[in-house]
Amino acid sequence: MNRTNVTATMNMDLIEDNPYLLLTPGPLSTSKRVKAAMLKDWCTWDDDYNRIVQDIRGRLVQLATKETSLYSSVLMQGSGSFCVESVIGSVIPPHGKLLVMANGAYGQRMAQMARMLNIPLVLLDNGEVAPPDLGQLEQLLLKETDITHVAVVHCETTTGMLNPIKGVGVIAKKYNKTYIVDAMSSFGGIPMDIAELQIDFLISSANKCIQGVPGFGFIIAKIDEMKKCAGWARSHSLDLYDQWDKMENYNGKWRFTSPTHVVRAFYEALKELADEGGIIARHNRYKANQRVLVRGMKMLGFETLLPEPLQSPIITSFLYPESEAFQFQTLYEKLKRRGFVIYPGKITNANTFRIGNIGEVQVEDMIRLVDAIQQETFWT
Ligand SMILES: *Cc1c(COP(=O)(O)O)cnc(C)c1O
Image (tube, rainbow, N blue to C red; front, side, top):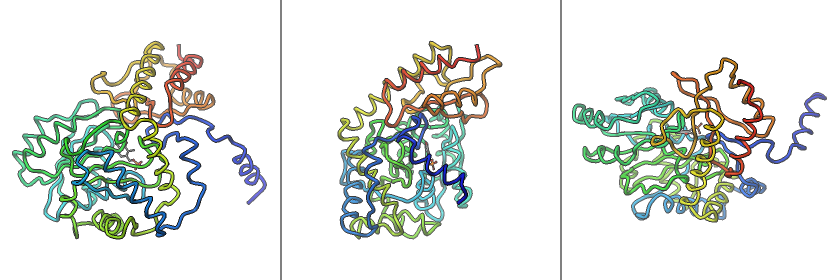
């Protein structure tokens, strides 16, 4: 290590806990309490640790449905996409066929996973700013009767759009299909009951609305559906059935090294969610954040990409202002210096940037942010 590196390392130690607030779709700002839970080392197969894993699994099912006896949960190493890939690669039988409804990057990512795994795929792409077309879904299911699975993203984080997962489920089940939902950026922040929604496999991750740190994700599955999947996986380390079977039958044991500190932090985050008043209270906080943000941004002349009825309380896309002088990178840098990190846009046919409302973020933070943007207005 040379001299400059040593200095850099020392400076890192001096940086405060939270040099900036993350207003992104994850990883996001977490509480001191959650971060503090990582200050202990845990053995990956010790009983105490495995008990925590089992408690987490039970709590996740309780958060997901009132029909707790019909569902089970399984934790999987990696970021959220690893968990999506584990589902896509493990729950579709050798002669199955997947229909993906996509209206953004995350729907497209599921389709890409299916292609790479050589799973027959039907892609129903409605573009990035339109909701999925339920009529088209029904037409496709009538026409291509060999489709076995339907997958959709709940909150399409690309734009912030909330997709109609209830309606998709009704049609999927009318034609007897297995139903997969990527609820990565919504689970824990938006009330839902996966039994009512008829979801067979729901995927989410530690570092979104549960407000843990990144390192693993989880799948909440209908037990009957999970039991069918033995031997179907196209990858050993992402074998969802095997991972579930081990956790279920060996009292919370992971097959391979688990992200122990992250799991411990997640456990704390689940308790913190309960202390906040559960998912309904958290949803209300996110909605208030989003309302205050949009009202403030509109006062500064910004427009949202989506009309309000399609907008989630998770993340909001704003259109660039008309002015030629506007540059996202400049705004980004200025806000970062003031303690806020915002997010670039991710869509192809409009210039947008995104601001997230999830994480350890309060209405007062949104007011401070709008204030900071007002003071940095350089494009008018
Ligand atoms: C965050 C997110 C994912 C997973 O992304 P990773 O970077 O792999 O954690 C998947 N789907 C949606 C909708 C997301 O918001």
